[in-house]
Every structure is written in structure tokens, then in C-alpha cells.
Length: 187
Image 1 (cartoon, rainbow, N blue to C red):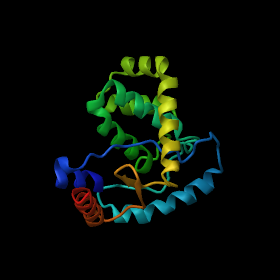
Image 2 (image 1 turned 90 degrees about the horizontal axis):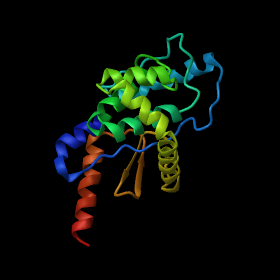
Image 3 (image 1 turned 30 degrees about the vertical axis):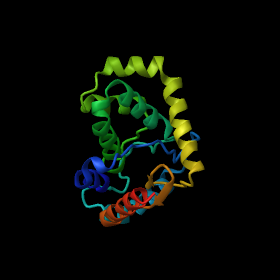
Image 4 (image 1 turned 90 degrees about the vertical axis):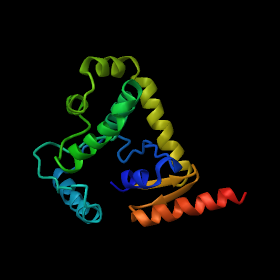
């Protein structure tokens, strides 16, 4: 998507690192009809990001009760198969926003990991033996983002201190990177 294009355009001038930010930190189930209505808000961002496919929730699957399981699963894949972390990240997003899958369910997260080439047994072992470590990392990243002024997603933080909220046009990100480079060169 945009950040993929930004990386391709700017090469080694930037380093995109995905950090955890919890939209549903506390596990809770809500009214399914209200959730379906909420997913209608995905239409506008979907129109702004032509390569992303956002679908109003039409699945019979329940909505995720928490963001933590998907974030923890991502951290596990990142730790055991770092070369697959981007593919897994993209697969989770597609499962949720396009396929309307409940990405808080461990069997769904495992299936998605296997889809991108992660060994199920290796992931299950990491999830069992290192769950506390990954959960702490997710919570630490979430809290660190809040300390930097992040209040929601999408949000891009430049130089670990300058949060830019909302999905911005690619040109805006390029302009900001160039301004930061210029500023750093003049220090």
C-alpha cells in the first residue's frame, strides 16, 4: 500500500517498522449489528487506498473481541520467521478487512500464518513458550505509541517522535521524509 510504495520509492533512506497499537485492548463482545454499521466507515479509507480492499462486514463470523491475539501472533511470526512478517501482516489485514474473518481466534491466526509459509508446529511452540514475552512487547509498543501522542490508526511516526495521524497521500509522506532529511543535514 502507501508505505510499501514509500519504501520502494525511497529505498534505504527510510526504514518502515510496524508497531503494535491496540484498538481493542480489553476483550469485549459488542452488538454485531452495531459492528456491521461501524465497518461501513471502512468504505472511505478503501476508496483512498485503491490497492486495499475493504469490505463492509458481511460474514457470519463474530467480530474480534480484542486486538491482542493478532498482535501477539504477529510478534511470534516476526520472532521465528522475520522474513515472513510482512506477508503475515498483510495476510492478517486482508483476512479482517476484506474477508471479514475474526482475527482474534487462534485457529484463524494459525491458518493465516500457514498460508504465508509459517510452520504450524513452530508457531504453536513459540506461542506457548513465549506468549508472555510477545504480549509484553505488544503492550509496551502500544503504551509507547500513546506516550508519543498516537491516538489511533493509521498513524506514521517519523524519527520516533513526530506522529502523523490518518492515511496521508504518498506525496505527503515523501515531503515529510525530505523535510526531516534536510533538517537532520543542517544540524
